[in-house]
Image (cartoon, rainbow, N blue to C red; front, top):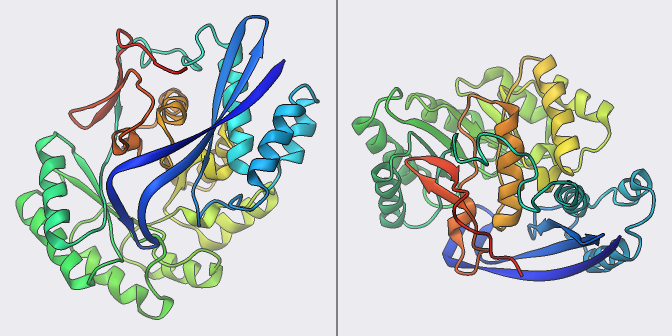
Length: 343
């Protein structure tokens, strides 16, 4: 096998706000493996300020991998400990290489265009009018589940936006999720969760910053609103520590982002642990290009979850990789008559 690495900077169509700041560009690297006339492609997707592998030696590690691609795979995965996005890119590229088509990693009714994945519509942070406009657009597009990022503007303004949605649409009409990205402070988080809970929300993701395990456990035990762990899972590689984390916090849900957790195998380990404790889960992409989104979507479809997934980020960029992935009526679809354009 021979491997190479190619950097791709994704440009947002418009700045996208989170509680950690505004995003205008996003870095990814494509790991390309060639063997016997076949090619496999994986995406190593880095989220600055969030990925644990956001370190100066990131590119050096990528080039090291391309030079050691024929090493024992288990040894490679061990060497890539602490670099979950690179580990995932390698796993993705190897699945791609072994498949009959480099972008059909997990053939199914989804890749045949016969089935789809229900997804949430994501509302990015911004001023009140911008968020209002996004909400209306998502409703007009047929989304039945809306996820709103909160924590960057005035909390009362965010509450009013949610009240207006709920006044028009019951929880049977629209499932509402919110994502605080760790924006609340432990001392006032429960008060805010109580205010949010009267709006018939499905759940809140990561109300306080990760690493405050005792405080998060207290919130999960006392919150009237179901809590989902997101960033809390990042960087926890040991299976015993994963089990201890879930047992201690006991959330209602966990959210799986393969690029941040180390790939499919690691994500499936989290799923198995969660299900053994009666904890629900869903999958979310992490701003990958269509290369990574495609792999995550195909894997997710085969998990047969009945929840709305967070897989609609492909339309954010002006220079994404053209692909058969299409968002239609609140679902992600793979339209096989549309060709990939990766070169």
